[in-house]
Image (cartoon, rainbow, N blue to C red; front, side, top):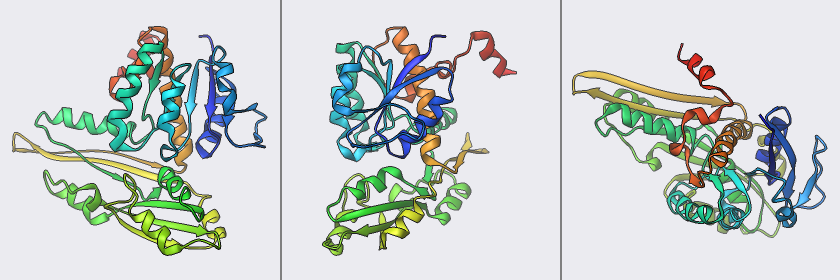
Amino acid sequence: MKKIKVAILGYGNLGKSLEELILKNELFELIGIFSKRRNLKSKFNTSIFNLNNLQIYSNKIDIVFVCQGSYNGVENLSYKLIENFNFVDSFDTHKKLKNYIKRLDKKSKVYGKVCLCAFGWDPGLLSLFRLLFYAISGEKIFSNCFWGEGVSQGHSNAIRQIKGVKNAIQYTVPITKQIEKCRKEFNFFPSEFEKHLRICYVSTFDFANKIQIENEIKNMKNYFQGYETVVHFVNDEEVVKRQKSLSHRGLVISNYKILDKYNTKLEFSLDIQSNPYFTAQVMIMGAMAVSYLVKEKKFGAYSIFDLPTKYFVNFTKKDLNGFLL
């Protein structure tokens, strides 16, 4: 198979994780990293280019990995990017996804491009299991999903955009008694706000108004609004120390009775030491799917629900059938 030529857009934790994994993957050739930031250096001597020059490379790149935070106006960037590039992103603002994919689908078909949206572990991998559990039940039984305890990169990044904030890290914490209740009780569905709390550690500049910052965090739409949120103001060293560990967890639970007679409990869980490295692995799997879609000229915007699982691997049909044994 001819190597897939890829680029990374953004060089935070996710971009750095992708760089290392791609360089060790024989199916890909990393053309470079594109960023708005100046004076960046790659640990692996990968070429780093100014984001404004990305379009120059449109004929040299097969797929772009979009690694910018969902809070940073990545939607407008994606709408522009699809004019010249196929890409995969891990856009994670759940409430915006429907319109985001709809707009990208329309434009990508005009320009003959493919984009795979919201392809991380959630939304993405856990979304797939929520759908599978729903389909298996045959009775319109939904699942409960829990995130954490772990570091949410998207939420942490959103806090860092607030005026006066120097650095921040945010932990999503599931409420244990709600998990146990979901496991014990049939068809029990607490709201997302009842299942999680959010804990923030924030360092600020000297001029910052901490009361205003805390209020802005707690009322941030699509991120903290509605959740029980605790904000701790700490020194920058404390935040940096906490940022050395980026572990996370996820859990999907479906607990119901078949025909109101047979107890049935389905669970999928993940426990990851590095959120960015695992997200990067999922995105690389998604890039394989994008390469198939491009080859078959199936242009448009896709989510994980639209893809045959065989698109995720470089296997023949015979190889795939081996997994059934």
